[in-house]
Image 1 (cartoon, helix red, strand yellow):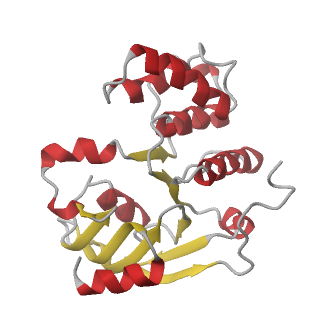
Image 2 (tube, helix red, strand yellow; image 1 turned 135 degrees about the vertical axis):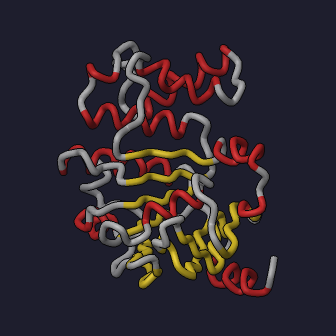
Length: 249
């Protein structure tokens, strides 16, 4: 890697994600990100925060190569994805789990089939699917709902299916874009506890959120964006390696 990347790696340790002077300017001239530089270490849990239009979604979309960065370099596990050929993008995304605010479930598929779909597209065998899907549904607390359809589930249950689908392949990186945006506070806490448990297995987690109360409660590293700029990047005061005993129940 180039010198500036090496400096950042020495500061942050083993980086799973690295943004090196990344700028994204949209076709209409809107600046989504400007000169964004940061690293996220293996196994970290990081919140992306900031007001609507600050650059959180752009950060996530260029990371997943939904959009191309205008300038700069983005590395995932040391690989410069800004130079990745289009036919390699699906392979990149297989190593990134994604959870969204609107769940993005297939409405005409059961819970089991929604989760199994993530395995099917990676070429998993039927025996592997039969083994992995029930296991992940137990992890997210939906083992009794595998034959239900999305419209038979609560919002929180639908989001748990979304998390299960994102994590069934055990990707090294999980990206969550406003995962609790449509949920009530109690349900939101349950979803964040679930994402936290996934992080504890070693998966690096990035969560974009407007929920400042949740950010304060979890006390994790925070990257704050404003007008496309990273204006804060720090561990929260009173950082702890786990939820409090009450939250961990």
